[in-house]
Image (cartoon, rainbow, N blue to C red; front, side, top):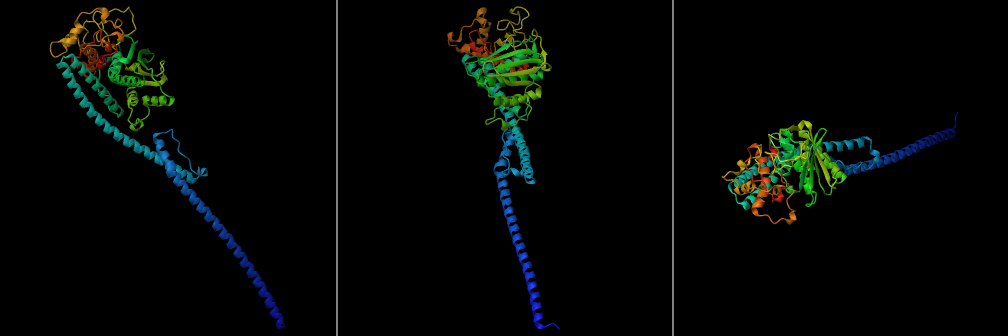
Length: 475
């Protein structure tokens, strides 16, 4: 029989062991809880850091990357900043952010194209109204020129008509850039007449020197005449604007293996490489043209050239430097756009530069002597002296100056005295000097049914030495 003290001692020992076991378990549980709390705290800290990093990344996306991505649509050379944390590149978060930028750029490009198309449609309508008003003004000026023969009034009317012609050219260029048709249908015409016709549309046309090295009778097919005249006018306008007013712009017409080239050389400052690359992209016409890409205010000349080169299969190159230090622009007209006209049946404009290609020694032709009093055969855009003189509402004073006998030396351009030694021109001479320009612009506007033009320049009118008739480009 177990004694009571032994039982008590055993119970106490068992209780002590149980207490010790329970205490060890509680201690382990407390340590585990402590570790869990530490892990939870670390996870919470990591989550807070990730949330702050994500917030900073989104803020960076909104403040820096989204605007840069939107600007890159219009200016591809701009760089879009990367994420704040380079480690996010390639992760699901980084891929999601890049997709946001791509979607934004696609939508911006789509909306930009839509808005620009609406702007071009509005401008087409506006230029159509402007052109109609300018044509009405042109007709009114023509009627006044036919009604009055006062030399001073005639000179003023010629100047107004030339200003109106320049406004028409600008409206036509704007319409072409906005996708409108060139607006004029022409007959086959001598290529040299298309070139001089484009020259006659410009202020400062006297500075342009045209050297014709083409075979006699080289012409353009009907649908290429007006595009070539527009392109030449814009290339010459750029050359005249970006070169000193006391320098010349040299134009050369040459045959090449695949057709004809019209080369324009100026003595301006030239262009930087970036400017030349941009100009070449514009005239190539490969990329869509947006008005927002043309500056403020828009500079539409090169863009119009790009439209026409793409529509009519022409080629323009502005990537070379001129031997005079400026820019060389080359218009290439391929053989399929060329034709041939018989100079005996349809001669070029009397004021157009004669070709330097001579199979026989140069001699005045009995019926087509340029600049002489012999009658010029009737051709589209030109009128014989009989048509022009008349005793109705023409300009008889200028007609009398043309039909009076004059020494050959007085007619020859080479015999004219230097500009500095010439006396000031009388109003009659100034009006006659503008007559050649008027005959070209009138023929260019009305084609084969042109109204009687003003008289040809006299020998003393120096300003007409380089004023070329646009009638041949007509039509």
